[in-house]
Image 1: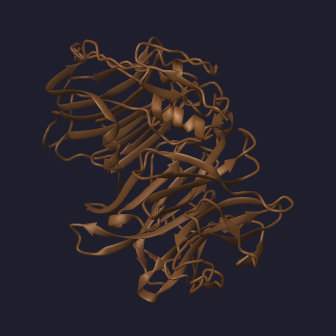
Image 2: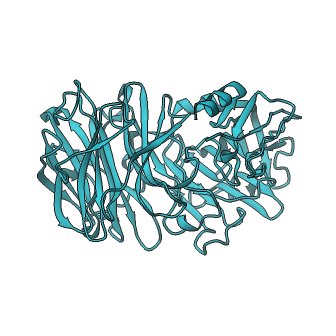
Image 3: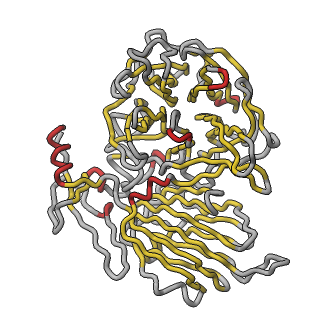
Length: 540
């Protein structure tokens, strides 16, 4: 199939960032402008299409699956409907990357089975020593996934001997069957201490996860259960388990991630504790709820197996089941977050999961503005800043004054507004009285497609030195915020008018010092040179 491309160029005028990927026509004609060297496939210039987050060229996508690094490639599989933009015909879509930034979409990996069988979430591993006996050489990729029918969920495997390009389902599937309607989302990893595979898998209705072990990926033995603990108000699914050293703590701990769906919408929590190869033990009280991301749109996140340099890298679905099927897009629906690196750090309240965008994203940076020692107040919100854009990275460090004894301050709230224009803005702020990071999308653009969409969320982010750091990624129809070096994360989809693209600093009450402010325009990962595009179209 021949691809269609729209040509464009960027310029920097009076420190003004200009970006309008999603204000171009959806029509597949070619339009030539002054610089024909850079192109973007017209499929990636549709309204609200994200410029540097992965989404398939067309159709529905939700949970990330099968994350594994193998022979120089990061594999991203995902829940995918190859036939339309609705949640149906669940299969495994597939993309690969060499750097966690630029992704190549590959053909469908694992398709639906006989009858009404769909391919639900799961994981993939490198079977290094051919423990399964399914590898044609010394190693291969093995996928472990849930086969779903209307009445039964069982765990199956499939094997690839060509770097994940084609897959063969195991002839003796299922490898684990509890004869249950809800039993899904296996995450499998190699437990080196006992030379065995470990599976953590969800019992959604029981609000529990179960642990199994195997020496060959085909025969599984029950080890233990965990839960219900933390938030058990909704079904549990998409678990993950990994070990990390605690920064400045001198110990290693395990983090157990669990996605859950209460009536208030999709959410994720984590538990910190120990895993002895059989059982996970929570270090905290049973009722403590630790959220992975305090925004509305980060769900089903899992981590890569076999990552180089022992980094724990994860990605999540950038949506929420409350309104995922209603978002105002057409030919495509669903996107993944930026890739994040997870670490553990000791805080006064205990060990917590810290997450930051991977450093590789810096290669997307282009035009840059830097400011030092600005002062903003209600009367003067740094009018010297003239900034706009729809694909930006913003790093800001604020400092406010407060009474050293009472902590009281004249400052009420301060922060950054993006996609600002008449009657529109998305607010990323800090509420001084409650010591909270705040994101407000109630006035963010198109919010009418679902009554629960226009929300203002806040999460506790205390500061002892009255300094607040915000690391913000803005991308056409999303905002991801990392507060105080990854102590908090908040992710949101937004659907703004792209022509209202101003960036503005603000403060309510008093004055705030902006110690530093860095803003970069970010490139689209779908950019190609004319030569690359011609070669790609010819190959297809």
